[in-house]
Structures are given as structure tokens and as C-alpha cells.
Length: 201
Image 1 (spheres, rainbow, N blue to C red):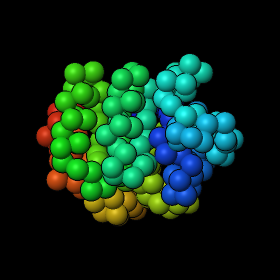
Image 2: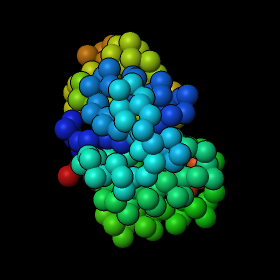
Image 3: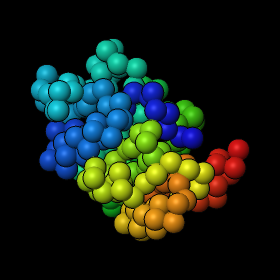
């Protein structure tokens, strides 16, 4: 269901303050973050994960199939197209207010390459006790309290509401198979109807 526990994850923009904190939480939750990309900062490390200048360089050392993009909105187009061109199968775009023209170009390229896009302006997605992408659920202790494994899926445009619903379900003994913040920008990748059809299969 979109995110396999064994999938190798890269983070584009990993050296940013918010991205660095996000990576720490993802690693603690068990997500397989293998490396990151920030042009001009290759050779550095973030939480023990090497930083590369380009996706092409990263892919020589790692078999990443998932990317989390946390870069300024004007840089999202280049970051996403680079990821898609190098075989990324799932691309989570956290950046908000991405120009609509740029998002349209990303979605066309993704569709042609068979890449699934979540976002822009998404806090992420989570498979409870399996893996999580992005900042969904907030800090790790809150994530562990709010999300529990089960068979109910949550889809929402609001990251905060996603966690609130999961917490409510958990408190009533109802676990979740996956929770996805679809993104709050005017144009997004996977929408509700597409995700519902995917989950039904």
C-alpha cells in the first residue's frame, strides 16, 4: 500500500532544519532513510546518513525508490523531476505553495514514468508500526500514541485532522492500515478518489 517497510527512502533537502528533525523522527520510527540530497553539501552527514549533491550520485550507492521532498517551493520542480528521472516510485512533496504550472509538469512526468506523487503541501503518510514519511503525527511519542495497526484507512487534506482522527480511532480500539495527508495545495498528485480505488484493490 504505497509504502513498503523495506523500501529505501531518500530525503531531498535533508540538510534543512525541519528536514533534519523529520529524518530523526522517521529513523526512530523505523523508516529506512538511507541518504539525502542537497546540492553543494555533498559529503556531509545528517543523523549518520550521507548527503549527496545529486540524486544520480545517491543512486550509485543506494536503491532508493521513495523520495521525500522538503525544499523551497521554487526548487520543487527540479527536485521532483530529478527524482522521477532516476526511478523513484513514490514521491512525497511536503513543500507548500508550489507554483501550479510546476506541479502540473511534475504530475505529467510522474504519470509517464509510473511514479505516484503525494502532495504538494502534504505532512506525509504512515503505515502504523511499519514506516512513516514526513512529519505526519508530529514527534515520535505522539505518533506512537495516536497510530495503531488495523484495517481502517484515513485520507485527509489536513495533517492535524489526520492525527486527530487516528487518535480517536485508536482510543476506541480501531487500528489503521494507512493514513495519508493528500496535500493542501490547489493541485495535488493522488486525490481522494484515486487513493480510495487503490486501497480497495
